[in-house]
Length: 381
Image 1: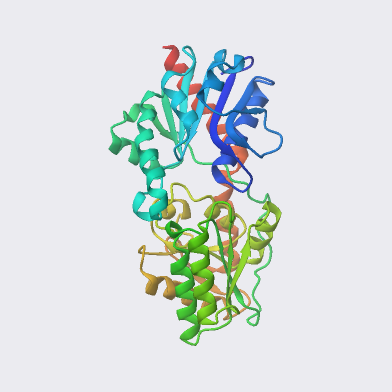
Image 2: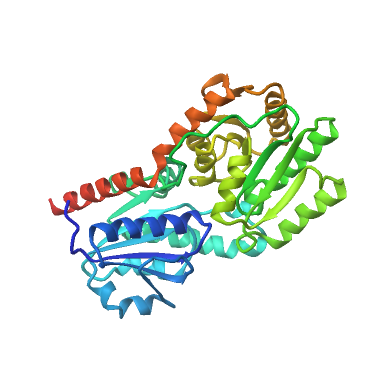
């Protein structure tokens, strides 16, 4: 495939740091700009990411009068929530190949009442995906949602998100039997992520006499629910659990990497995940995964952890307890995984890293360009 000289427009609601969809948008734009230099532009309602060739627009009207848009050969739309620009998928520019990237929509029962109108509009706007020549889905879980909606399977494929992981496998196991076992949560502080269940499980674990662990909660306040976050802080304060539950607030990419490298496990008790990038990031740094077997989490975890039924706080606490006790036993403890049996933690870390490298930006580039080649070739026939 030769994309050199092709004009490409990428459309998203926003492009902001510390956001999985935004990173996918930015990485896609960088890859395509490398094969068609100077011919790629990102259109969004907000863009806070440096180095992306793009234009901030206020609505569909700005697209329909933009010369780059009008002369584009390929249009790529990212979708995970309602935004006005996504309506431009229906008409395109009258000539271009229309592609979409589906990141899934959080079910309305998992969001607070004030957010349900947005979710309802998002679910209605998903119908626009039917106008795309092809839709890339982050996961088979997302693809199944579109099949259930009635989209033709021949116009759907799975293209996992790009994830940055260290080139080298993690170093020595961080366990001396004395230091606290660190369980990390990274993500939005919202109901759908199950953070309340995690905090409850941590308090119950402490109250049962199990010590030697700490929970680190890191997440962007901008994309979290303030009322929900306040309820978490009250729960911790009322239980006097500040010594084992720490709120880290928003962290930079560097700080996030440092937290993952210092953690023994990532806890992700989410009720809905279309992909779950933190799981791959954490596995790439040798973290064990503990959480709920919901959405795409079981698939992306690939057996490198311990997942329990969504909403089962008692089993979540049990998985945390088993892991904490295992890690505190010796310098290179044995951990029990759902899909790979028992193994020394040092071996687990090597194998988890090897798996995570399959999602690297380099591998994503290969898959993206191969898929584009297939889609364009099929259209030409």
